[in-house]
Image (tube, rainbow, N blue to C red; front, side, top):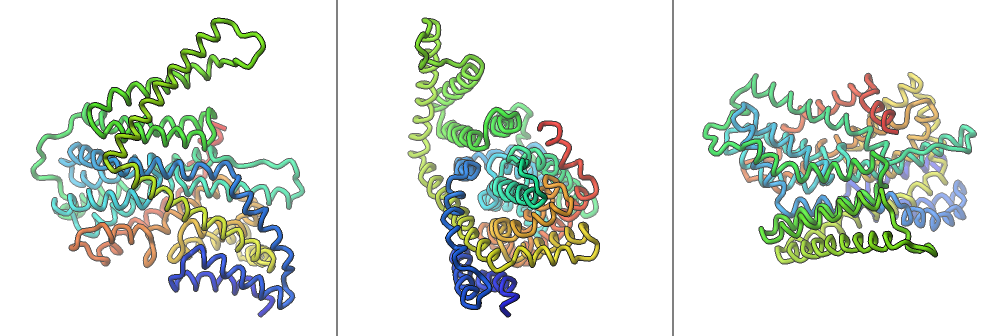
Length: 517
């Protein structure tokens, strides 16, 4: 038994989670118990636990992970400020006259919310409360409607920016560096968040197109399952659509553009997104706020443009009068921007949007970081018990070589997705499997996208798919759990088709990063 303590430890963790124990306590508790057991049986040096402090410190000082609470705030603020509701209503009036058009509207809005929020729970619940009843009232099949809402909500995991891609980029970069060290390379390359965002962009758009094609095909084969709206009053004009869609799209472009263009780090871009989401929410608090929001947005844009091209350095010994005037202009722009931001804070506070947003942000952030920190304990003990060598041995002995090892890992991640959350799989399973896969010759960026779509599927797989639980809580009483489970099955197959396409056409994920970086 002592020789297989590492595998027993992994099985024990899954058992504790399935029994309903809190995830973070399960991870750390199992790790500590098996560390003591391993030391008692003489298969682990307990002094290895002395490295735990360094691991925790590395997580807490990781600048990339600082972007997570900012992106979470951005997403929750947009969800709480009813922007999602306006998008769904406008898109529904635009495409509603088309057979399957309401479903297409939900998918497109899901993609927009994915790129602007990146939070699956917020998107699924919002669309479950707004879009699902509308689809059912207009004669949509309950299973199809449930599948569309669940699946479009999970796009927040693959379309950047998303918390999954941020965590995944950190794990994959560390694994890539570890693989290079094992190859004897000490001037190692890294993988940036920008590269992962660029790699995931086209696959995310591809999945959206696959979903839309399926809905159109389903509506053509079975017209009663996705009928056109019979009474479509006040069809939305393109001007009206632009007025609703453009603000979130501009926010997305500001965040993604600054990262992909190399103008800002992910953390800096996340702060841009958080401030932008706050100003958008302020815009929706009332007509009196709109002039302040426009002034603040214009001031921030001009300040970024001017300061980037014409910086001022007043700390020098000799500063010309022109530079003092330039600095005063910049200071005036800062004051105008701060006035608009504080006005938005006050407006969202009065509308009871700010406090729920802050509470949700703290809850989600605490959950993610607690899992990441406790996973550090687990991986340390797992390595101490020889788990990394066991995994390498298993993968190297797989029939089919590198291809067989990758198929095994993808199947393992897919099966674990039935029981575990994406954070748990990312920070526990991947650090011990990915270095071996990279050593076998698999491209790390291509591998990241394959894993990301596989992890996205974990939100849809019964019995513990989180999107299913989110929708179950927000769905009307006439939508049963059976309807939800049946509805996501075709979309799980579509996800697998997406993985297969990227597998056989790697350029879908590798072309854009190679062009930009």
